[in-house]
Length: 127
Image 1 (cartoon, rainbow, N blue to C red):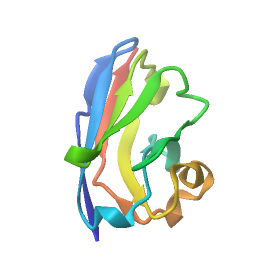
Image 2 (tube, one colour):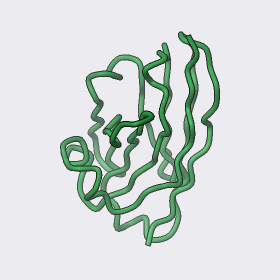
Image 3 (spheres, one colour):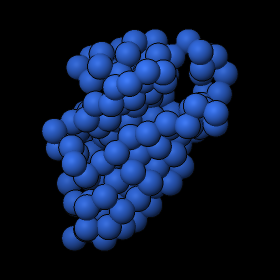
């Protein structure tokens, strides 16, 4: 099992920034890819960004490319999502995800197939 704990959500004005953190524990060696998904009100969970625990490779949804940056600290088993130039349409519950597949696979696979999820953290962007 892998446990994921997110932090860093909150309320921010449009154009502002937030950084989300996801601390992983447990059998983290079983996860190749880590990522962030989000679920806007009334919508399905959607891919945001993903990164491999080792090696290269970061992937982003087109809607956040150039504004969001995913990074990792292997020593701390923590993944971050730096969100800049936030827009009201970024409002959602953000979920950290871990999977035995790579970040590249996480970009295109169904959210229903993800191995592990965090509890989610609310991000609200006001206009």
